[in-house]
Length: 79
Image (cartoon, rainbow, N blue to C red; front, side, top):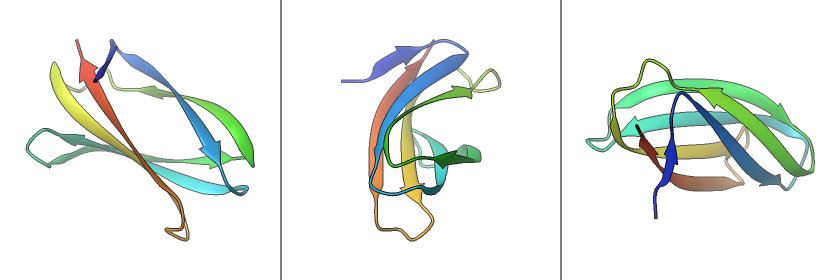
């Protein structure tokens, strides 16, 4: 089920290791519309990501560490 967000999404991520993680936002057509890197610590992390330039609709958020050993996918609905 998509998580509805307005301009800012709070993403809870459970990281296997302390590392830089890439957050990529894709439109429902697969186009990359936003990308940023955040440093996460091992364990639970809460990251706020601003999407104020994204049009309303459904999106896929991929979170991946630098070694491609951990990857999470979230469904978002931007209002």
